Image (cartoon, rainbow, N blue to C red; front, side, top):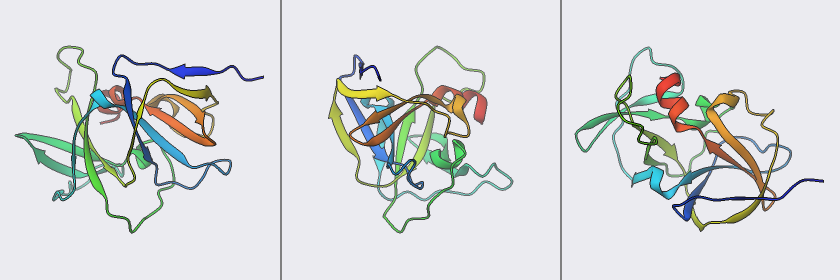
Length: 163
């Protein structure tokens, strides 16, 4: 019997956005971010490619005087990416503020597709295995919610270890 859990956070709200990957166990996968992690969502932003960069880096974008890497969360986690014709947006996310970092990167941009949902916490969910995620260290947790999977992304590991 699975034990119920509630995702709790002092922010009280989260954003849930669809992953652009095939269904897992016949369930759609979504990424989960706290509202405090998200700084901006842009609809039209020119991304500049970076030659010889890893496949999960789609380029860089200058945002408010900062050059930020544009990351494909799906490729970063090791998933097969579904190429969609939906209009993409760029979402600026930040890592937890733990003082200065080795690489001085505390933000990145993610390519996302609508719909982006905002939910108020707590939400009822159940922890499940992350065995189907190729790069497990980049996920803080995986939860079953309304017959979907929610993946809480470990932004700090992506920024400080993955780049």
